[in-house]
Image (cartoon, rainbow over all chains, first blue to last red; front, top):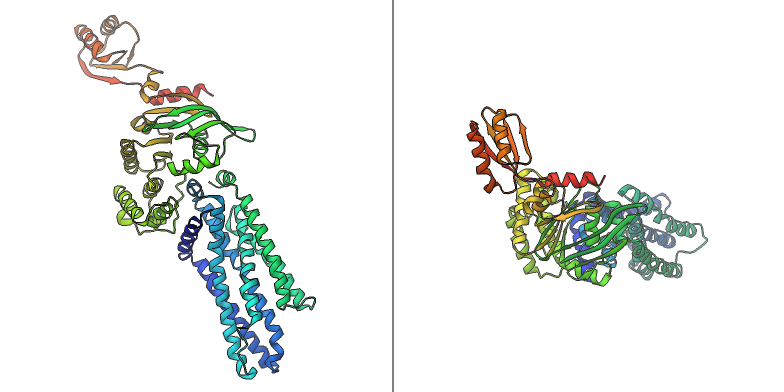
Length: 244
Length: 306
């Protein structure tokens, strides 16, 4: 596998994304809205029933978990376009006639969605952490973020969840024939993560470092499995005969 | 350069390509003619490794299309213009070519040189930074041909290269194909435009699932009819017709004020025919030669296969 070939696919997709307003909006507005939104929500809750910010700290992990969910959701828009765009514009036939291997195409497609999505998620998380620090630091007497909990949530589980979302959506996009269908099915990626969040909020599990580490191990296994499923389901012949 | 032996492709119960056997020489322009659904595109897709064969063998430049290692070598040797040009409409013409050039490990400097060369040659250099989506059909087709050539392939597969183009754009593409031929590239061309095939192909194959005939356009044309001399006479009468029939025993037809005579060697036979008509009192207005066309041969073979 030649990584340079995959990176060439990534660079081309980035150039296309720069011209696609819908993708640019998804990549910027959603993380900004979540990052600022959570800070505002916390501020409003505190204003309604003032209590020490230290009592909110466990709830902050719940907010951080939303960035894991966000990292898996954003690829629904980006990854589905990345593969479906090729199908819609009928660009796969000339691409498959080049010396590019299936693995290089799949890796390129996964990276071209993963990179902007994870960057966008981190942007939202940074906005959230700065906002929380601004609101709470005076009362707490220290700066809450960054800390180890945030590091495990954001640097370990978030990229794994983003990879999960990207791979899952790539898998769907390879099999279906239009962007809307791809996005509808791709949205299913939200449910397993939401269940973890609900279990946490309901008190069945605690969304702490230990839980997130276990969750991350599961995601690693799932990501590896989906990559190989992607590779095996990427049937050149079917793509050519069905979509060209 | 291109060899196929009993090449067959089935899609379930449907046989799209049945038992093709042919050989294309290096530097030859080989045209595949056939109606829609004849299996032309399927054949190109098999030969370029985009889809697999059901049975039979095929080699490109000595490499086997069924072998995955050979296929990588074949992909470096060939350039493909698919039926749907498949350009990235949100990328500029330059970006489209640069993207493909990178897959063949062409250095940045050489890539730029080649892009500049082809875009200049095809009259697109001034539009190099314009998005491909803004291009006309003809411009897109030319850009897709440049893309197929970016890595300097020895063998080109062109699927309907002038389909849906206006006459001027068609001529530009045809002239460009002839220029590629002069560079000794092997060109495999799918078309249903018989005039195009006659003008640019060294040999043609007529197919309708099966290969029905294969030869030069001229030889194929001769298989259905011979050259005809058409004499237009001011006032035609029985005496003139009989005189012509006597001078050239064989197939003589009369259509209005025209006598149509089948000839084998027009230069040798025409003087006697014209002299007979003239001596019989015929005032000759016009003499034309009608050669058999590829269209007649094509229709004969395609209809006979029904």
